[in-house]
Image (tube, rainbow, N blue to C red; front, top):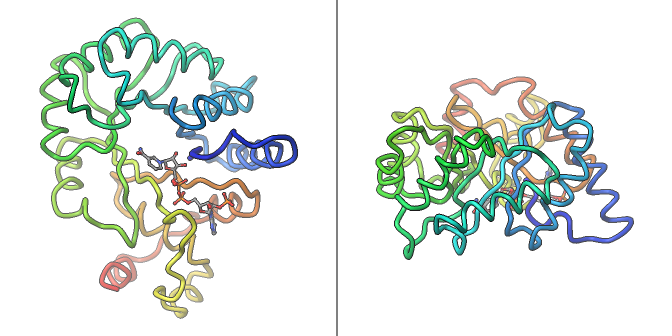
Length: 249
Ligand code: NAP
């Protein structure tokens, strides 16, 4: 994740670049960004990082709610492509649903971008079941690859309806803020469980959230030590029983 990355200057910026490069080196090759983040600065930073290694990474970015009209989507995509310095975007996501522009108009532009080879996959973000259903109906020729929503051990509202719905539609759920912006519920995760797996609370949270095949997570880390910790969070899996125990807690 790259929210709040790319605005810093000099030394801090250098550390962010180092952290993301380390993540890629360790196999965390999906980068999530958005035109909205830092008014384009996050995309520019990602562009700088992926220069020369474009084919090794999967770039997901997002079109902002104020750009969901047909022509606006096309030009927002061009601008993102320019800032990222790439020829195409791997996953282009509608950042938030619009109450102004009909979803049919937005999705028509998304399909046009696929046929022009500007984007590979279409995604949505922050869409409810009802909004996702409408988005699916608005795309007769293409599929929606993913829905990016808030999901973590301490925020489970999607489990009742949205998560099963996305699974039924074979849509990947991209869990944002999987670490609750760094507010880890360390006191709630049993020490015995941390000891059993030799994991930190952050690693348990990432392991838990990616337990289902349908869910991937996009933690943000601008410190190399956090990146290293997160990269090894799923090198072993917590058991089904421990997953249930954590879920109950
Ligand atoms: P997050 O990933 O839940 O948490 C990031 C915070 O956790 C940072 O302060 C980071 O510190 C800290 N952290 C990372 N690894 C850690 C570790 N191992 N131990 C302790 N702390 C750790 O929050 P987020 O950045 O808000 O969300 C992740 C990404 O989701 C965003 O960057 C963005 O790409 C996406 N997102 C999407 C939406 C949407 O509407 N679609 C909304 C929000 C976020 P350091 O940076 O100091 O390493």
